[in-house]
Image (cartoon, rainbow, N blue to C red):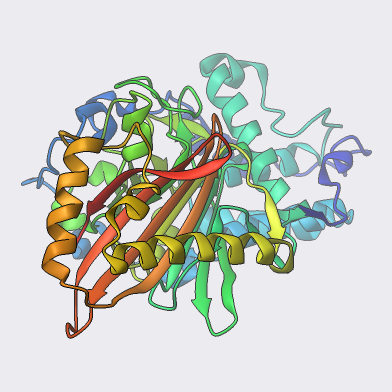
Length: 446
């Protein structure tokens, strides 16, 4: 991450300003007190708690027109909420407290449910009459009402501030994105340690970072392994569908993007659970605290809405990492060519009809559904016979990598035989065995 100079934390300990009427402070604290009640648990509502139960249409959900008041900010305006908060932080770091206060006041007027903005506004008001030892210096009686929630807001403040002070290198991408075809228009990466979601657009020059948003993850952190463990999974996933707000209760906000957890690597490791979504927040909230879901990734509704309008199900990969590693494009070129050659070797063997050569690409631990390696060999033998020597093309090849307990490749492509215009979309999972890449799962996904 690239660091930028800003130190708003140091400003809190400077001398106080002249005192001013406290009416505005009391108003800010009143809003904050309402919001400091413990956040509603996901257990009764989130898809991860239901474990793959279908989305329920809420008969009592208000229409969009009913929910939006005349003063409600439009999605376009709402997208600027975090940028406005970060601007307040910048001004604080520059010692421009009066201007920061004015902008914070305008922010909470536009977004009264943005609890962190209310806390910053309260800090700035208090700083006019006393020295504050740290950010989020609420009165003791307010802290006693919900001490954990206040600490969550402080953590949120630090995570959002990191988005201002530490930026990804402009010429780098998350290491998991090895190759994506032009037909994959977008890609998403989540850095759990920074509570940050990064949205990439795929253009003529490859992936480009076009937006990044604050995001909440599992209440007990990451590395999901069992049903109901309140953790967000780590790995390489794909968006499977798009759910509109009208299909869901208000708890999910603007909508949801379900992911294909558990994927075949998760199943290989015995991981259980399901219903992991990217989704919004209730209409009476602006954001969730950094660790507050039952395993999903939650974003502010305007930010999720901007993603819903852009990404395509089935072709959009989502990488969720505890901490993203950013790598320059030229640093991956050798690895990219090597893996392209690996997949090309499989294609040649598949097209040639040489079954023994083809089987050398598969792991002895291969499984696909209820088929083991021996049964898979029989499947391939039938497919090769039906192919009758026709050449084979791989279209829209995507290669994503993952590394934790072992090295993994997630490879997706369209398989098109000579004389055909379309073919099956297949996904393979490769793992290292004795230093060699081997396929341990292969299946048709479309």
